[in-house]
Image (cartoon, rainbow, N blue to C red; front, side, top):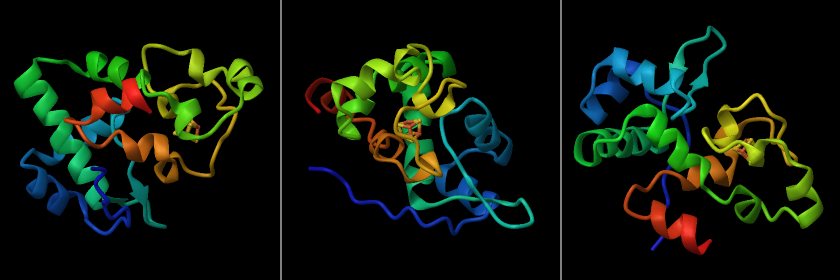
Length: 142
Ligand code: SF4
């Protein structure tokens, strides 16, 4: 069953790092590597929601238990069928540059998404990639 996770950004980086069980530095690295997206306050401070906490736990698990590196996780995320999660029609899919990138998720590529949202944080593609255990099911069955 699909998890419902709060996406409201409320945690400062120190609290988020403690919840995930990683250092503040490592949490910043996850963002720099395109694996999570943070919200920013007006002054530029990063804020995390429960969604990013869950995602960061999933990333940690993939590294520690599956032996994946950042590039491997990006490739896995690139397999998410964004066109199905966003209900793109064939024309949109065929004309989308972002979907053709196979080594990084759509939100981390410079290519143009055919169905952009103001923030990829609000997109089901980014939000559905939270669950490590269900990732395979989402990729194969969505
Ligand atoms: S809005 Fe962002 S996350 Fe959603 S499909 Fe487009 S690039 Fe991907």
